Image (tube, rainbow, N blue to C red; front, side):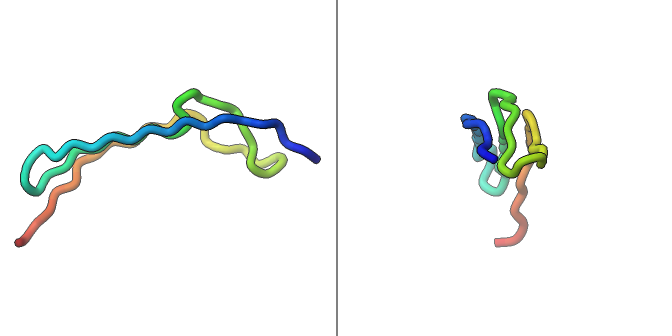
Length: 58
C-alpha cells in the first residue's frame, strides 16, 4: 500500500539567558499535519516543548 505524501515543519529556538543558563522552545509538526510513516500507525500531531538548562560547576 502506498501512503499519502506529507510535509512536516518543525522549529526550535534557544536563548542564552546567562553564563550557565539556556532557555529553549521546540515545536514539532508546526502545521498540525496528519500523516503516517507506517500504514495504520498514528504519529503525534502538534507538540510543543519548553524548558531551561542550567549548568553547574566550572
